[in-house]
Length: 79
Length: 184
Image (tube, rainbow over all chains, first blue to last red; front, side):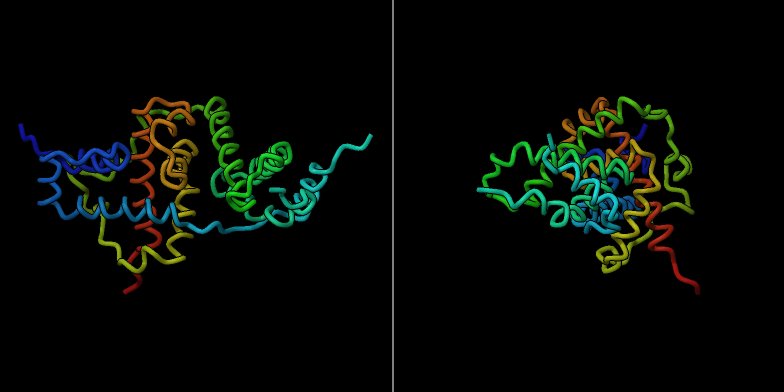
């Protein structure tokens, strides 16, 4: 039985390593050394994380009706 | 430090807060409710606003907590889905990447463009809610895994599965849509 993780294993290992903060084990590092495709996956997970954190807030703003509802909700209650 | 007049909050901060909420809860009505809850919470605690940060940053912090509460409520109401739903296995043939789904090289500049952010947002919208929420909490909000798992009401091992699915599906979606080779 090979100790070297497969590409299937590597995808999970690379994802979990991002969250655990633990360094990759020797066999996983060896796999990355020989497998260009899994190296790309690691880079792509990094790109996704960077893009997610820096993504500008885009899209529509509040509608005028929604703004009006919110303004009313902030008004002090009248007795 | 006094806040600005609450009567001006909707016009000053409404749109920015709404976009922030909408990108995380993906539902306009829910986003609007969260803004309302945020303004009301800010109104209640405005005397405690110290002015260490901008008013918008202070309100965004309140909104962020409201979004976590929303996620917790949603996790109770909406089943998390079948934990064995493993469509990522289709990306592989045996123990290796399949020829059709093997990740390709992403051109560097293209991954940092504004178009990439738009494509990422579209791909995020295509994820199932639990998978998208896990990604938003962990990668957009930078929440620690333990805290994110608690917010989603799942054990840490399940969060790891959700994040794996999110990353794999997002990379595949971006490759198919944003990085698709142009016509020859």
